[in-house]
Image 1 (tube, rainbow, N blue to C red):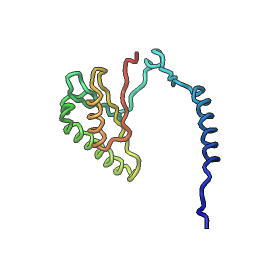
Image 2: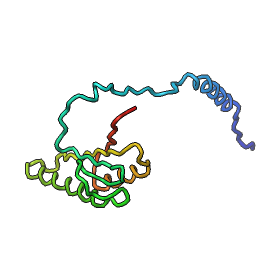
Image 3: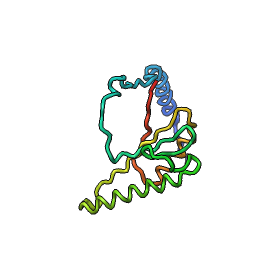
Image 4: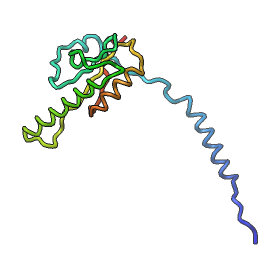
Length: 146
């Protein structure tokens, strides 16, 4: 009895046709992503900030502040900041439960603001520390776009 053999010629033909199609399509793909940066007038509109907004700022000397209040540790030792954010979220949960919104949404949004000269790794450490406090979502605050 003869062993069955797979004929790979049609498979190779199909692969070659696909290869040619992808080679033709590749140069047609868009090569850049255009983003619209808001104009100066759009950014300067007066908007009242949400009172529950939490802003963690990294100062040029690597100190951490929450909503402009200093004394929450440094980039290397962010435990005080993490504990304060965790306490703030716990307070918000208790307030929501006392208002009869048990299990309801509690705002845990945190914005992180750092100078451009701050190293990427240092900002990543701050993001990790904020995430450890239970914050969600975490956003990077960008000022002075060039």
